Image 1 (cartoon, one colour):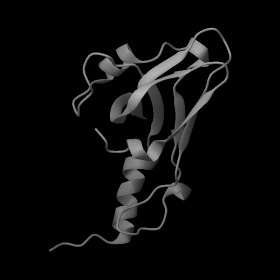
Image 2 (tube, rainbow, N blue to C red; image 1 turned 45 degrees about the vertical axis):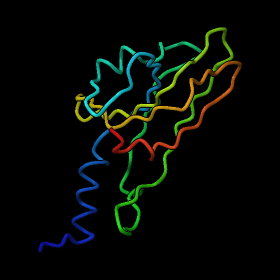
Image 3 (cartoon, rainbow, N blue to C red; image 1 turned 180 degrees about the vertical axis):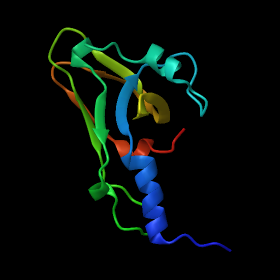
Image 4 (cartoon, rainbow, N blue to C red; image 1 turned 30 degrees about the horizontal axis):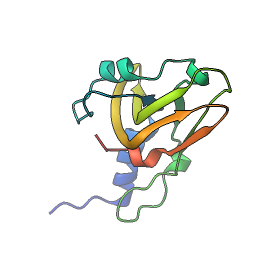
Length: 138
């Protein structure tokens, strides 16, 4: 039986997480739930219109400092995406949160979460999403 050392696991986490840029997107999907095969083009079709209520994808990266001590898995520092409505007359309406990863210009769907209801942000209200729940969902 082969055993991976914590150093090897850290190296793999570095390769998989540190070397990409992540984006959190909001979508409104009303016809069919997403599944593991959901494509980027489907996500882009369903995505909230950029500018509605000030909506834009939120982008972040992991750094080496975000790799925490190995403990029955490789934990990463928590990241929170906060979408804030800009107070304009258009709403931000969504029922899915999607995690995308860009590595050297190639964007892929990492995970998604369907919400139990449709959310509508208006008048400067905000939604905070713990990004950790999106890793590996799809």
